[in-house]
Image 1 (tube, rainbow, N blue to C red):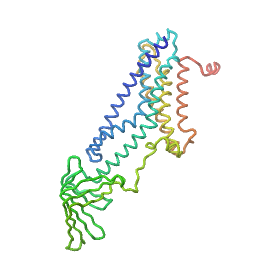
Image 2: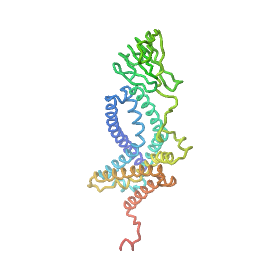
Image 3: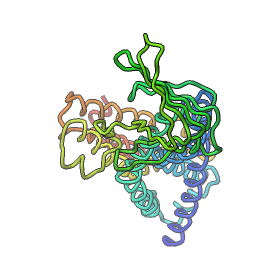
Image 4: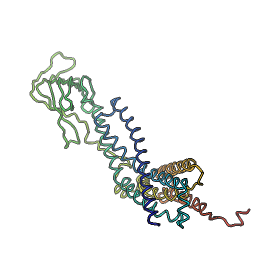
Amino acid sequence: MSRVLNRYLFRETLGTALLVLSVLLLILVASRFSNYIGQAASGLLPKQLVFQMLGLNVLGYLSVLVPGSVFLAVLLTLGRLYRDNEMSAISACGISPLQMYRALFALGILFALGTAALSFWIAPWAVRQSVALRNQSTEITRYGLFQAGQFHQIPAIGATFYAGATSPHGRRVYNVLIESQKRGRVDIVTARQGVFISAPHRGGNRTLILERGYRYEGHLDSARFDRVHFREYGVNLKLVPDHEPTRYSESGQTTSSLWTDPTPRNLAQLQWRFSAPLSVLILIFLALPLARTAPREGRALKIFMGILLYLLYSNLMGIGKVWVAHRVVPAAVGLWWVHVLFVLIGGVLLARLYEVHLLPARERSS
């Protein structure tokens, strides 16, 4: 009987957890997609990077969504068992709520392992990739090399760039003009067409090879200019300066780098990553006594209370992370006090479920 019940609870809770997670993901995708579409429409993000940024953003948020999804799934599943009097039948068979933890914690361990993989490896990787794509999008939108018919400033070389037309993928440009001024001298380069080539050894800089054009050079206060005809002429656009390496926040650093450099901010991020899988098990422990309802009692109040507790839990973890990063609390205390607090809350709810009195009878009567 116990094995049948464990499989039944595991299956029902797993299905509900996946459903809740899918709904939360749809909400997240819709919200972030509209945000990225707005950035693309305003020219802040190239349209070809919208779906890549969206996918990486979803991967980064999964470690936050999974614990809440499992918590709501347990509340909904057990609440239905209470509503349909199935819990009464289970109790009549001699199975206590404590025995139900076996199936629930088996599911919790499965999700905790997945959350650990997300928190320790996948989410930081997604942050790093997102930063790299954002830098790429900044290069494209800042210098506007793929937008025809507009003048664009290139501060790295002190020049103004113009292309009358571009190829569909932006690799070729036509009717090009590049103008720069330095110490009273003006340098103007015109060409019928040009092609961009990458230069990985230069930190991602691009070189524009101009074909069949002219170069004009002279003083601003002079009417005489030197003109040189060329078949090919290369211009290094210096989109990514070599002396400015990409820097990642603590959320994008690898777990090993956080461990080897125990600064307060790194320790706060490290404890945050440990908290994600741990919170899955603590929320399951909290959900079982919280889900108890009378046969004719509605589930809305318990679900509302559960959501409030989850929001309180996640916000206190966020506060604890900030406190550790700013040395308000020592790293030894860290975020662990939040987990201990909610384990105690779960213990109090469980004691009420079993009608276990935590105070002596004399204090209760007074």
